[in-house]
Amino acid sequence: MSRQSNRTTDSKKMNSELFTLTYGALVTQLCKDYENDEEVNKQLDKMGYNIGVRLIEDFLARSSIGRCQDFRETADVIAKVAFKMYLGVTPSVTNWSPAGDEFSLILENNPLVDFVELPDNHSTLVYSNLLCGVLRGALEMVQMAVDVKFSQDTLRGDNVTEIRMKFIKRIEENLPAGDE
Image (cartoon, rainbow, N blue to C red; front, side, top):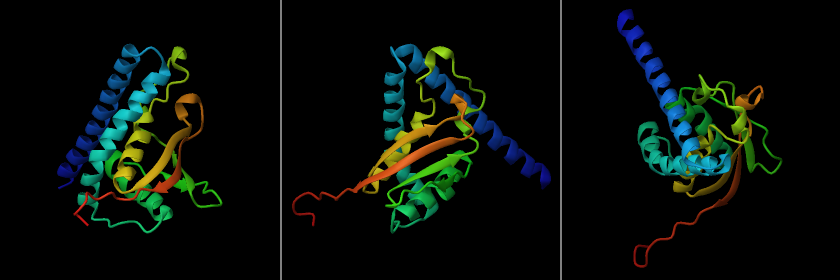
């Protein structure tokens, strides 16, 4: 039995490392294809958004979680369920704004940056910007407009990786005429 358990653990670690290396190759190719870091950051966000739009269906099906009642509950689900399910980490939810419409996800360990060092000529590259797009795209599909950005990054010498999320508005569902 323990042998099977070790294989599962090894398989998960290998899948994680393969994902990390594949993501690194993607970012490297984008850096070659685009003139500057800002364009690469936009492309990573756009790719992430498209992933998030599709990933939310898988998340809702696999997690059996219903509609969140407020932004605080949404933050907890993102941190404790979604990040754990897809990246194998559980960020902490902190730094809530007084209005309760903005918070930070603190990642002690960002799995996307294993084996990564940013070259000096890419000082404005937001290497993990794909995550911002994924969060924005997924939440938009459940009628939440949010602004998502990195405010700290271990690749830039910060102690932790911090993703800042701000609730913008609830998106009204527009049903086609006659479908009401």
